[in-house]
Length: 310
Ligand SMILES: Nc1ncnc2c1ncn2[C@@H]1O[C@H](COP(=O)(O)OP(=O)(O)OP(=O)(O)O)[C@@H](O)[C@H]1O
Ligand SMILES: [Mg+2]
Image (cartoon, rainbow, N blue to C red):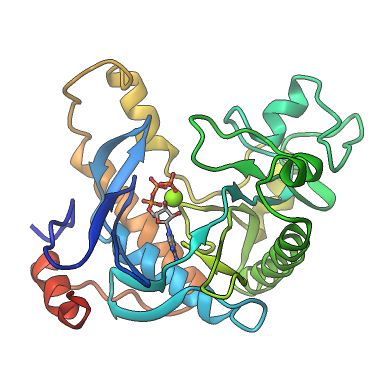
């Protein structure tokens, strides 16, 4: 079938299987292969046709539209599902700019705010805010990376905890705000609100801070439709969003995703619907038609990566 679940390439470097990507690590490069895995509850729940290609191509659009702000890790796009990047020492902090107060997970602003939290270390929020309201200004909520659970960090903790030097953090902060501003501006031209997102940075061979991983993808960012935002908020409705939650909810209702060894299969219509949504958001962001590839994806990638074999 025309879906990429996993890869098993020899001579491409040491393999690390991430939630969504297979990463082959070489001396000075990383080969990041986006698969079609849909992950939640720390497991792979389903395969969504075209998801890997959408993630790679949305990242590509944004890397190219932000490279004047900060250097990024991209060396090559050898295949629709693959980014070859400069291997970096990834900084152990995920930086999350937010323009709205929203979210449902434990570390989201709205969840914490609802519990009474007002002081977030680097900023304080006023009383009386409503869910999905725009913040007076963009805030940064850095969290730890590679710990079992994301833990919020303040500037003080980042520096005193040795996560980054003061200079590195100043640069990361400055660049994150600029990237996010650019993201919001371009998104708005396409009728989208970039609500929040996650950036990862790394140190290159000269210890320079550069942007790594992915950028403004529907997996790492939240987008709302701009046209209907005001009207829906006024009526107390949720903004019109790119929603991939419905599939996660289906699993929650139909099994115990934390305990069950074997998971039920999600209905085909739901898988197809999610695939359509990924393609639609790609087309809206980039303003170009999505090219559905035919043929065996793994074979194609193997072929396209020949020159990166070691
Ligand atoms: N230029 C780079 N150099 C080194 N590592 C990179 C680079 N770009 C991305 N990575 C790493 O590659 C991995 C991408 O895989 P994926 O996002 O699927 O993993 P993940 O399950 O989210 O893992 P993690 O929780 O570590 O991010 C991430 O660990 C990311 O930090
Ligand atoms: Mg990741």
